[in-house]
Length: 309
Image (cartoon, rainbow, N blue to C red; front, side, top):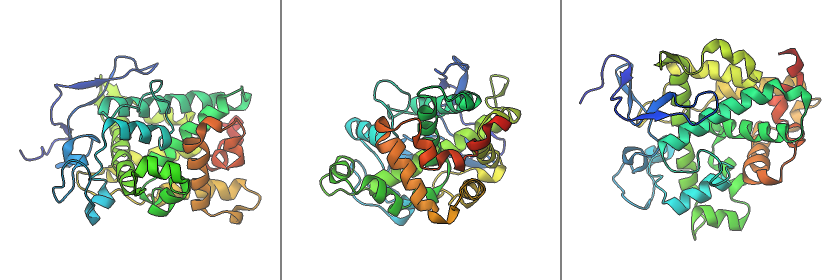
């Protein structure tokens, strides 16, 4: 079947409903692909067509082609492997948060819940209530992981965060400690996350868009500016297409850092983002309300002057 020239879902027979406060019961996605500008938008992170290799390697990944590495294919995980990935890489609490199950429903509900939490806690940022800033920082770190692009998911960044501790490396990468599958899985999730937000910002569900553009004013400036880029037609990522580098999104955060740090040249962005992932995702259970300030995450997202929002 050829893609439709009309932007629409390939089918609407299996709706995914929200289990998030404020959106409970809304249709927020479908277990299908989306036809977009006569091409197929990648909206399924766990379909065999996404997780299998471009050269036909089935089952356990047996290696990766160059195309697998840049578009996130050949990343199939069993339930135990995904549990470890969700906990150590996504920074999720098993059994307590969306995103801990390897399916589309769990993923899109995690993305929507993170959006809602970021929105609500930004409004209360100046109050500095106990545990609020810690929670906000962890959600922003996961937003960075999944929405900044391939330049925030380089092999070097992955190795520095999840490869320096031998136990963590082996838990994620098997006996050989090969983290390539972790990067491919992240790229596949990042592509779907990008497209999910693109659809929520531009496409009608339940008689209206899930995230109206005028509501972005309630988000941290960095999140708002990045999502405005995600809403552009050119931001769409199609099946078997590489994840974009994300230079424009990272530049937004770098510009905020230059305006807010006394010595912005003291750390390069790779060093900073490694700190975010390590402090708030890998070791997030040990983070504190001050962590997002100390590792410059709040500065990068423009939250140092939230009272003016």
